[in-house]
Image (tube, rainbow, N blue to C red; front, side, top):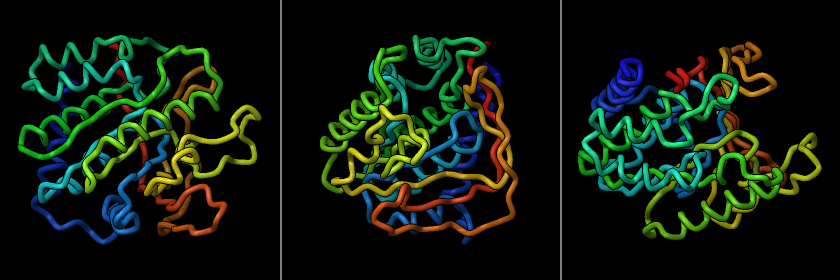
Length: 271
């Protein structure tokens, strides 16, 4: 548990520093908020299994929830995890509560079964949301994915996830915002040319009638965790510094492409 606790402390250190220090002009969260503007459904397309992205999302949750603003975080977790997530948010975050959260069926996987969504860094993100809620912020977190191992095609899964997100978004107060963390393919407004034939539409493409803003989270260097038979750390192509790129073309895949400085592999959840 010690590593999990260190990650949670790190996430909260970020939240505290964000609350007392003015963000730098090139900071990733600042750029996302500036470009997303008043959009109430901000979809973040990530590389799964990194340490930095959960910290970025924790930062965004803290900033967006200031001044009594209502913010909900949607994670690529099965809907069956929502009872455990709600219970944890109501808890004191103690050892018993953490153990109940991380030993639910979704989190208990081993070795090559990890697809990057299960990490102590993600658990620390959930803890960061719990602390914000305990401080009186109007925040919450829920999953929107289908069940692990469900026999569905890529298109069926994306359609189901979009349906779950639509239901959760429609249940929000009129002025609330939702942050959605998902794989970068699900976040595409239009499918890529090399997408599998059965994928007619991506998750985000089913939601374009909503106030959606899609962000692709890239990085200049580093690694992420992915299942390319077998699951392993995958290196990114190293690139020189570059500015965020906004796209307004009708057939765009993302509204914003943003480059984080670096990514590193998250700490996986098996003991």
